[in-house]
Image 1 (cartoon, rainbow, N blue to C red):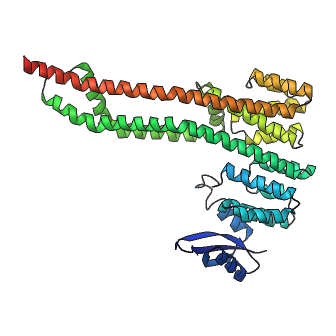
Image 2 (image 1 turned 60 degrees about the vertical axis):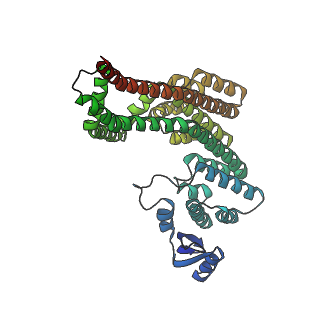
Image 3 (image 1 turned 30 degrees about the vertical axis):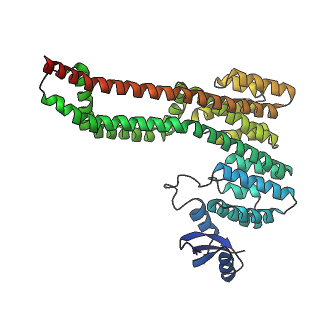
Length: 412
């Protein structure tokens, strides 16, 4: 069925919208749009290539910062997909139904492209793989395993559970750090405003007195003058450092060193280790549950780990497994995974329940990450309050001391 790109007016608002729609002819496409309260002003048949580049990946890869589709959107779509297939609906019809149920334009366009490729003879996993910014390597490989084993409905349900959990954890972490992040930005803004705008006006009065000022007042005036004169250069220097750092980490050797150093940062390093252990365990366990053998499952794990230091060790782990060793020993030899995780993997191997044990490990570390974030956030809030209290106390003393000194001279 042909696919048409359209530009249309929204009934009642006068606003314009763009999108794609499938129909047997331009006339039927216009009819479908009118049923959606859209009045087309432009309509042209789209090729697969134009859909893929323009509507899914954006006009330019350089300026594309995301797919515009959240993890929760993909999880909802995946669960609906599993329900439709479980009800006995053929694959292409299920994709048609998904396209009509999805409100996200980018996701709808991707599903449309996947449907057309499946209709043309491609398997589902290969069609999904052409949209990597929406469907991850984990997603594609789980679908591939489900197709190969004939358990696609079960795999999709399991995948939806994984995505739902990822979205939930991400939302919990973001909600936890939102308030302290706002407080930090607000505190920096207030201090900067006071030091560059308010303090210079107040200290001008003291300078006119031409008398010796307390040390704390001289310090306040010096800091304020420095920020007023060189603040913009300081910000520029920080921006320059950020640009240099970005260039450095964009190179392979710099990225490896940075990814290794991140584990040494207080608090953050421990948190990062727990996050990566949870991702490693959940991905590997899910892939094994879906029917993949150990080495292909480790390949998928490698592709979704965005830390070069971990990936270097994963190469050694895969080499060890390829030589016939159990998973626990290469994990132990790497020296980067906690002893508790290795012990649980050993228990899973001995009991023949490695997949379920890996999922338990992931659940444990996910909960640990949440508790760690809550603890760090609980520590940040009083630190911000103390810092603001010290600044206010310093400011009050620096202003009041010369005033008291002048009043003493007047009284004398």
